[in-house]
Image (cartoon, rainbow, N blue to C red; front, side):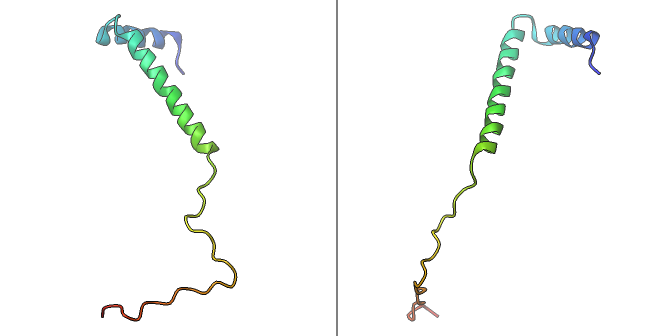
Length: 72
């Protein structure tokens, strides 16, 4: 379980490695990335399945005959 002491240690390490000026920019970009990920996941779930590429054959339609002049 993450407690307040763990958060303080993580914040101190972040300041140590990245500097105080860089942390707001990093957190902002992380938040934008998470929101884009959530939009992508929600969009993938909401999309209907793709329709078939070819329409079904009509009733009574005859299939195409193979070409008799095909190379052997």
